[in-house]
Image (cartoon, rainbow, N blue to C red; front, side, top):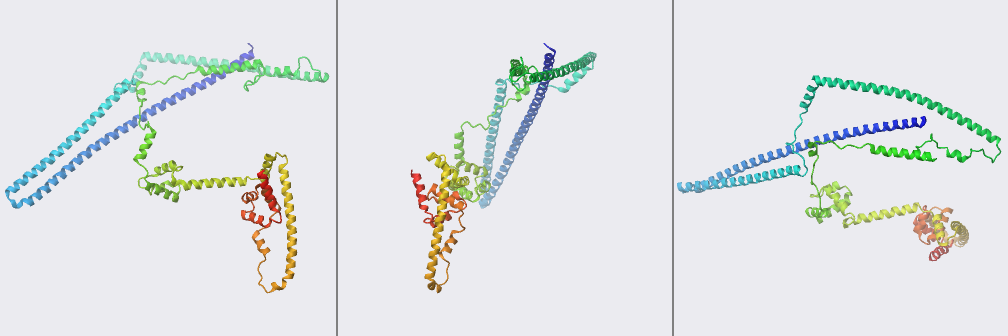
Length: 547
């Protein structure tokens, strides 16, 4: 093995060692973070359980106080009722004498005894219910603890031996203060010092060796560059001396290209220019694959307490049959026809302001209104108008987009290309439109000239009769006022093109012109129907469609 290869291998090994050290550091940091997160989660869970236990205990105390207060109030009410009954009886039987008073006292005593007996019986029944509930809870607790021990194999909190960290620290400090501990500490310190010095010495030796090898490599590179430059100059001079078409032995382009990716080639691009480069790339990939399997993440170290706290078997909120749950929800709180009517009325008034709609429904909140809308907006008859408006708006947007993106020349060219497969359909259509526009302009000029001559002759003949009549706007003036601004040649060309393509569909023609409304297009057709012979263009469009 050459020195260059050895030096390159050492550099690769240094790079791999550095990458491994970085990966180990990252794994160590991630393990510490996971351990810290687990400890914090465990601490939070214990605090949460403690708060829940305290809340349950406080609720139990409050319930007992409320029960005692209710029993005291009931006793007071019973005593007051007995006193009122006794007073009423005394007032009613006062005239009867001593015998009536005695009987009244006996009745009052019986009523009081009955009330006390009933109260005692109710209290006994309540005590029995509380005792049965307490016994049931204790049995459930016992079964849960037994399940934790039998199924999961985890010890209970009372069975785990707690570690006294203060005692452990004190024991370690006491052990280190003894003669044996001080002797061990001194030996360990001496060993670490020797290792540190050895590492420094080896680092110094490697640094010196690296500097020497780097200098040798630099000299070699400079020498190789000089040799390459000299060879290139020699080759150039030999080419000048050699006639064109003859090559030098060993200097073919194929040989140069074959040795282009030598040992000093760049293998990072993944391009193998020779068999040697291919072997180097394969070896590099094999080394990377080996590095992936060299490091394995160890399992987490958990004691019995951590494993016990990690167990959480809960089925709260589990829905085994979603269809049945939805049906029960609809049966428990269904929407009445009156509520639906109010919802649709307020929805038409406020739109999607569900919070404001819920204010008009006593049994519904904002969430119920949102769920009802998104559940029935596609099927309920109350939203039919909204669905129609949305569809109409969608069609309007589509028509506007089609109108903006419409190009008469391209559409006509596509239609001609599909029907006749003519390569010059667009040019033919443009020529036809221009010819029709010129013909229409000439016909209009002739018609205007004839109209002017006729109007002048009529004016001469009927001049005397019209002098006595009131002056009114002429038909031509009113027609011009109705027509609006004069049509340009481009608009006329677009009109003729649309007439050839769509016939008398003035909606489509107005969408192609864009600068004229539907009424203006219709009026232009009526005014110039005979002068421009527009019926022939419309008939040509109908004949083309029929063909």
